[in-house]
Length: 162
Image 1 (cartoon, rainbow, N blue to C red):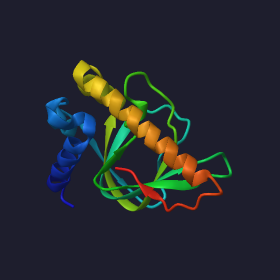
Image 2 (spheres, rainbow, N blue to C red):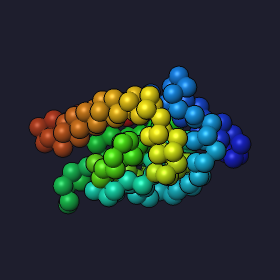
Image 3 (cartoon, helix red, strand yellow):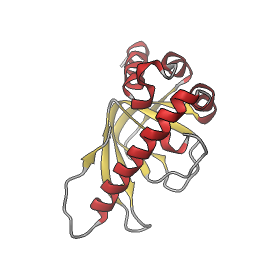
């Protein structure tokens, strides 16, 4: 996909993120500072437990969310393009990643650094409040999906989170 087209898809994806809708966040500025990432199959972009220093916007491809104790990891959800992840560890105070996210096949993404996220999102009180509320709801959903996926008595299919 040509870079110009990818930037357009990136802007559309940013504008679909709940805490960026309605002009609360300057998505055009975020799109300008986002750096392209082209990834091959099975590349871990986020590792459970690491301190988050960037978020990702997936414009082409699919990623898997992997959770569980060491040695018992399991795919608990999928993220399809256009999608995003990694933002929860950037909203407000830095927090460790709650899951590992790996690519499935070739993926085209954009990464937004913590410093750019701070400058454009965390410095905007209205956007930060919406982002915190969205992260709280998304955290609850991911926690429930992870719990259900790791429960040996439940055999639910992998969920899609976008």
